[in-house]
Image (cartoon, rainbow over all chains, first blue to last red; front, side):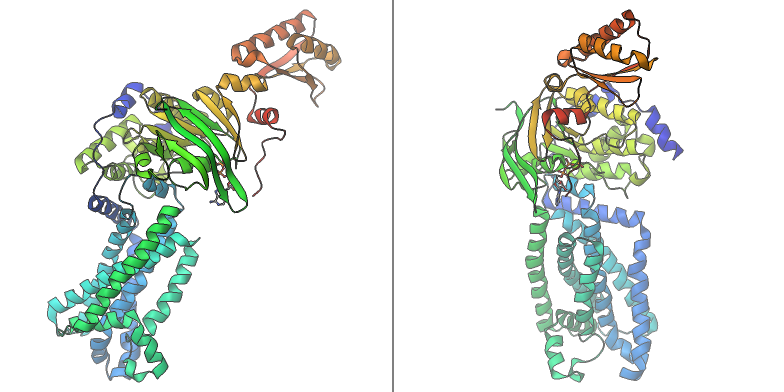
Length: 280
Length: 324
Ligand SMILES: Nc1ncnc2c1ncn2[C@@H]1O[C@H](COP(=O)(O)OP(=O)(O)OP(=O)(O)O)[C@@H](O)[C@H]1O
Ligand SMILES: [Mg+2]
């Protein structure tokens, strides 16, 4: 603090020095959409660097989920935790990562209250790049969470038949879908008034989506009316796709379903997000 | 036309029942400092946000260097930059990171952005603080990093929304000096403020707004002469001499004299014809007359008209914060 006051008291704006920075040099051309998005991605990385505690959520939470459900349901549902893990792990990975996507909305919502958002909006850049920057930072988190779960799974006895390629393929599909799915939260982040309401809505959407799915048990064991919901649930299709990739038997039907859903999510919620962003 | 930086006609912005900006007509000449003066809730921030393409007007038109703020938003964005009322840099990032980020977003390659950031930090006396998170900066340093970020690409028009509110006198003077240097280099500055003194010191022209409407516009001199140049406050040694003092001052200043609650104090409005020098001259003549009459004066001061007095004179109501 003492340095802060010192700098203030000794500073006197000097016309010559300020003059050199004000001299109009050749203005560079505006950055490409790619470069602007990457720059915002860099900002997201810097924020992780300055507040590394936030990575606790994406490492400890998935770890806890995996351990908890493996041992809680393993014996009852599949005879042994190790057997159940073969079924559960892809699903628990999807659940954890999809749950983490809600932090995107919270981050956006925290930022819009701040003046720095206004500065970004007065820059002559490709407008969606600000939002894509958040999502690039989030992809790093999703990757960390997936890796933690895969490693814990391997330690506990998860043995994917698809090998390394299958496991990586499954994770990449999950990252792709999560990127698309996160646009829902950028929209809510811009639309809602407070961080708390963003959290509230997120839980309201995510709880049924992740639990009323094929993550924990086979849908065939559920009552008919519930199967209708479960089979229409995008998470069910995502889990089926990731399982099929990790098992080394890619299910093209499910994969197509997930890819089409991802494109639709971006088209619909990306558009709504940008509309709100421009109107704000 | 080309010598106008900003032109608005009938600009309107409504929030629910509040007409935050209510038919504003402005013509801001290029190359100078234009002051927008108004109390809390007058609509200053709202007006600036519309001009900086952050808010869409609900009515009327606004152009910046001839470009419509709605239809040609990108053309406007490439010419202006905004230092908001509240910090417009990222507090969690360091000063250097903030400037490099903006440099990259303005199209500089990484090495150029780094170099530019270093130059700006140097010019704004922030080199030592470059590696610290902005949230650890003092109020004056924050304002400086904010302004540094705003002139990164030497904008043609710089908006400063209440740049000195909450700063100590020294930091305020630094900001004023920076503004003068920036304008001398050809950037037009539109500055909002609640202080007549600030507008007076910096601005070539001033618009006074209240409840979203323009209530006066002109040079600081024109504005002050319309409200009088200030007030003389006199404290006498002997309360018994007050009636005489009142008569002498009224004659010397040709103005109404008010008797304060304090039995030895009087206040007189002076016109000064809009010039501070003239006001001081009138006041000293009045003081001399008091001495000639044998009235002993203990204390004496010449005050500038406050924003309150400007408002009282220009409208029929004092400048109070509008209840939302
Ligand atoms: N987003 C908003 N929603 C609702 N009302 C708003 C909004 N922004 C501003 N207002 C209202 O519009 C009016 C003008 O506000 P504005 O912030 O432009 O005033 P100002 O002159 O900048 O005041 P200050 O000196 O306090 O910064 C106020 O009555 C304010 O309550
Ligand atoms: Mg304001």
